[in-house]
Image: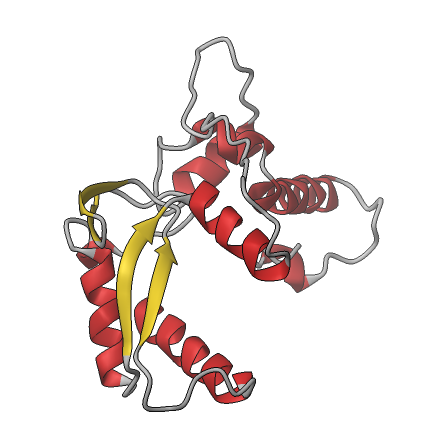
Length: 182
């Protein structure tokens, strides 16, 4: 489903492109930025090692992500070839060059601290519960404590508990029971 979604989105983009530089008969080459741990087998293929960032598509681990995207292109009738599997920095360079042909370098600052863990980090009951209920428990602990993807749900959990323990906010909204509603 993920790769079919990407292929469908690319198909819509190509249909709207209309700049005259390509016809529908021209084969397109694609650099695929995939920001998850992969074992790169060649310039255009890589085996998914594990999911991070809240993704958990179990039957994808161990598969070639570029091949899966290529298969989705075929299902959608797209004549697009995954020519390169690239990391964030290369993807940033490509986007920069697309918008400004004078772009010659790209820098992405990513400390990759999401999976940092230490017994010295103070974990609240909210952190522990969120981690336990996540698709990848005991993984990406630091990311779950500080990143924007998870902070809204930490806040939701705090507000829900405050609402259950006092009448400070009035009647409890049923929406507060919905994970990641914030």
